[in-house]
Structure formats: C-alpha cells, structure tokens
Image (tube, rainbow, N blue to C red):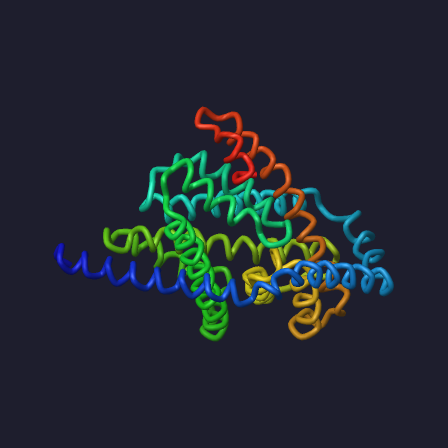
Length: 317
C-alpha cells in the first residue's frame, strides 16, 4: 500500500468514525429521558434478583458450596478480574496514542478510576475520561469518544468470533480451549503486518478479555457447586458482555443478573436462581477488584507529577 492509498484509507476511517460518533451523540440525546430512568430500573432489577434467590434458597445452597471451595478458585477469580482491568487500560492506551501522548501507567490509572465511576448512574466515568484527556493531553473530545466507539466495536467483533469458534471447533472434534485459541493466534499473526498491527493487537487483547470473562463465569458456577462446560461458559460470557454494552444501564446492573438467570436453565439445565447467584458472585468479585483498583488509580492521578488541578480532579474521579 503506497502513501496515497494509506492517506485515503485513513480519511475513510476518519469519516466513518466521525459519522459513528455523531450517530452515537444523536442517539444519546434522543434517549436522554430513558437514560434518567434507566439506572433506577437497573437497581430495581438487581433488588428483584436478590429477593428472588433469597426466597428460593439459592444463596443458602451457594454458601454451602462456597465453604468447601478451593482457595485457588477464589484467587483465580480475583486474578482474572485484575488481568481484565489491565487489558482494558492497555487497549485504550493503544487506541488513544494516535491522538495524543498518554503515559502507559497514567492510562491504567485513569481507566481504573473511571471504571469505578462508571458504576454510578449515567456513566460519569466516560465523561470524566473525555474531559481529562482534553485538559491534560490536548485530545479532542471527538477523538476520545471515537476510542470508546472503537473499543465497543472490538468487543462486538470478539463476541461474533468467540461463539462460532467454539461451536465450529466442537463440530470438528477440537477441544473447546484449542478452538478458542485459534482466533487469537490469527489475531497475533496479523500483528506482523504494519498496516494492521494496531488493530490486530487491540483486537487480540480484547479477545483475551472475552476469554477471561468466560473463565470467570466458569469459576463462578464452579464456586457455587454447579459446574458448567467451557463452551457454555463462553456463551454465558457473550450474553453478559452484550448486556454490559447496553448504554442505558451502568455495567448492565440488573440486566446481567436476569439475562444469565434466564439463560442458565436453557444452556445448563440448572434452575433460574442458580444462574442469578452465579452472576451475583461474579459481580461481587468484579466490584471487590474495581473498588480498590479505582481508588488506587484516582490516588495516583492526584499524586502524580502531572496531577490535574481542582477543575480536573472532578473529571478524573
């Protein structure tokens, strides 16, 4: 590809990104009334899920199984979540470095702190990250939002690949883990081509995040005494990630619990409350990691040499 072709491809990519970002902005404005009510709906769904499993004795059975669980399972859950936090920061660092110079550690701290903030209604972490980049690094809001849209696109691409990979591998007689590793091998191999290196690497990291999500669900079901197959864990993880991407509810609160609960009887044969409990356990570990890493990230941003001023503190928090 010559310089003219590369410039033309870049212009097309910029036009597509601008159109996508513009569409997202218009959609957000149109959905503003729903956005105000959505957090309360999510919390109501979460409370309803907890009440349901308590009445069905789901928690009692889960706690009985967890008391006998191996500590290694708990450590693996925490470790996989920590790895996911790191990979998220790395993906955004890769996507953002086209528009401005952001130190790697600073990006990790920023993503950790804003991920915690995104648990609040209306995802304030997203706007805080955009404002922080604009103030500290001179990155336009349009470009910062573009990286968010691109990261979502990468996630969707991972979901589109993961399910067919495990399904196709099963039909071909491949082990599920081998079938799931093949797309990653292809993605990493594409890194050898300079024109595709950025996207291939970003996609590969996002794909590893998808696999780690499947690992967490596999461990969560195992922890409560109702183990599931690897391919089932992948399907559940894809549904969970899709629910998380719903823009109206922060981190899919309430949606994920009921989505996994309703899916469990279909894919696993377990009761609805067992699927909900597995999701609640997975979310509990998620929050147990997101809170300390988010606080550490916020503290780093405040104490670092390039610490924001009082106006930026609110943006980063």
